[in-house]
Length: 238
Image 1 (tube, helix red, strand yellow):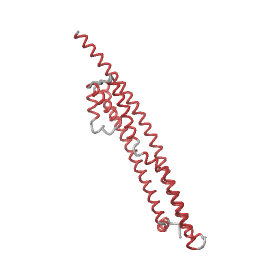
Image 2 (tube, rainbow, N blue to C red):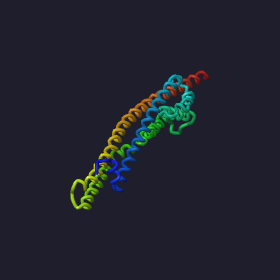
Image 3 (cartoon, rainbow, N blue to C red):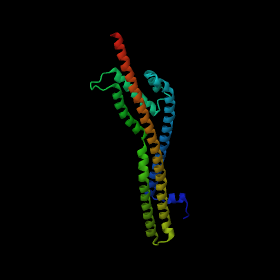
């Protein structure tokens, strides 16, 4: 038999074909996750950058209603920074309008809410990463299973022919090597994609945490201004 991939595929047994299909499915899944995460991260960065430019002046002017209106706009809704700002300011407005029996200030309630929300954002950023991790770690073993199946096929060829010539074992050995190579070809890109995306996600999480910290600083400043203005009004009434 000549060394042709089509001929090897035609001579593969059912177990080897199943293993090959599983590996191809794993490779397709990892490629899908990688492209989806890459597109999502780039879109979020572009949207967040545009949103930050739009609300910069409103943040300095403490225009909370204007910021929330921009955060709810369709062109900004897909950015993770938009979600963080919207969640923080929505809680701040709610905390200002409702009394807290625990005695916590509006800024403190906003800080606690943002801490929990940042965890949710981190989970959303890492969505699908478990697929890449699983493929990168499991695919070599699946390929090794295909190697074992191929070796078994080679021994079956020896038993069927009654001799150990190259012609009797070449099909099984070729099948085993193809399965091994396929397993590595699926695992290596998955590991590289996982490491690349992990670095990008960690970078984005760090930027979001810093942005949340800046938002909290502004919220505390707004609250202090509100308290001072309220005190001045009471003095004028008195």
